[in-house]
Length: 404
Image 1 (tube, rainbow, N blue to C red):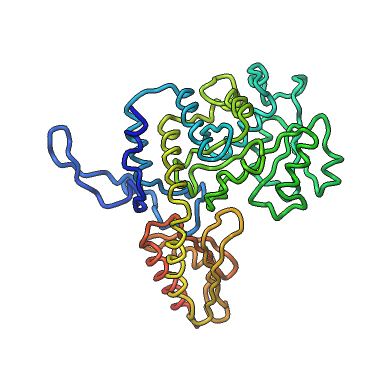
Image 2 (cartoon, one colour):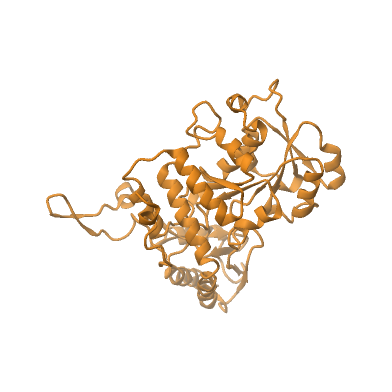
């Protein structure tokens, strides 16, 4: 199956709704008789909802576009060799992102872990088989990051056996670097929560000949971030494929220097005696992510105006209600999309945030939002167009009926 057959018709199609959650559609069986398409969510009793919160993993991330689903379906009908496919797709992704090399991973967490593994082992397959046991192997054992960059996802690094050393400022960093230092890691989402910026972090790492890695899992849009950190000089860049890129939820991208990507793949599936064997990525996910990435780059920021209009619809519906104020903003790093905060005065609107959240959740259709303090935040960028009107009406209804 040729690549052009897999991505034929790649255009700016409208956002697709849930593949399984819609109205049952007619199909034809082998005998030519009409059969109903199963609604498995309804059949299993699983709640579906309008997602006003964002690309959260426990909320199943984002919705894939039709061309991604077509690619997954078509590519499932033939066999290929996984390593060959990773070679070819990785080369294309690297070209798109200004990297020397790239590989598709099982999410951004997997990209972090495999990148860390590659830094530790280099191209030594025997060392790859030893991870996460570093003692007596000759491998380095420490990763340095800023105190404000310490989050739970750093478990991906410690899974490889390393110890994380937190620093606060340049002087402490310089004192901490030693012959045990394997990597200097940077969390882009917390770039403003540390005394050392991107460029200085890279400069200091190069001064001491230490590799750098940046976690930018949820940090597109803007689309330029896909190559910004490669151009900046990070040795490894980790990105989710199942968030705003809208590839398979279980996909991610590790990109960067050619030798480090090759080293990371020594610890990746399909190799069986490595730390990454369980981080399997199938052919459908690899190709689906590739097509999603191509589409995301092609569209660029063209959907931004639509997102602004959706937010404006919600703002217009609730702004001016008694005791209610709104604020439209764009988060600076992760989930960098138009967002609205709807806030109410509890002395005027007798409604707790928990009550609002439950009322929206238990309504029909169910709606999920990001709760705050006497407020909710809503992003529309993963909604099916038209759903913002439902959210606007439901918010207005709940707020209006709670006014004393």
